[in-house]
Image (cartoon, rainbow, N blue to C red; front, side, top):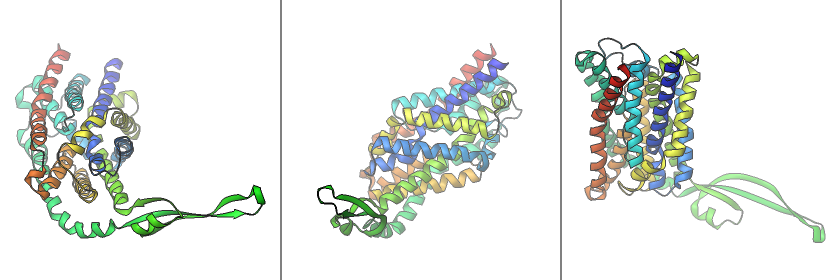
Length: 367
């Protein structure tokens, strides 16, 4: 039993790693696509805030744990680590595959499909509460892309004028120095250093400016942090649900187990988060910093609201749809539709693919 519990914990960590490698892109792609950041800095930024969100989920989004441990849409709870192990195998296998091919897919979809596949093998198709599944899982997942595009189109015209004004300013770090007398041994020392808000032209012309950050770029970094944090809050409980049994058996339940999942998500983001990020950042549509900020704002608002309401929306669908919405706002020709078709196909295949892998794993483990 100890080996089974440890194996289940390792599989939950594998799902967290896979989630990090695929989903870190959802909060940082706009930073790269709009030219605000390079890939390495953006991935490190998104990974840190994802980990922080995953830790915060221990206090803010525990309602999702019950949903993704099978309660609600299973007529009877399936007991034993082999069931959750099969679910973890199904979800992790598909998300790993998608990350390797650069396709942004939904870990939420993958876990849902894997739960259904393993449950059918364990007790038959009658175990599934199809109405509950449709209402609390399929409906939010289906409506979230539409909501993301609609919200982007609603708020971007309102934000555009303000963002244009903000873009004309920067925060400058001024450094003033003085020369201490002493002949040949004169010393130059810094006597004052501080940040000031000024127009871009003034910052560029001032000889005392040691560094500067455009205000809109700074807001873009903050919106990326908010989107990454919200993603961590929304995704961590779903993965924790797969390891609840093992966490109790290993004596690391509660916040320590959330911390372990957060570490695995962060590590997966840092190691494997580049390929999917490239797809969302450069292969869907062109974007400006203002448009990227708006897309991140939409993502963080919708995902945070869903997490607080214990609705299992897909951060992948929300963030990807917000980026597609940027292109649609410019016109249909601004969107790279072949890339979008690949993404949508991956979204549609995720549920049945994860279900089939989990069903096969459940059959093997039962045998």
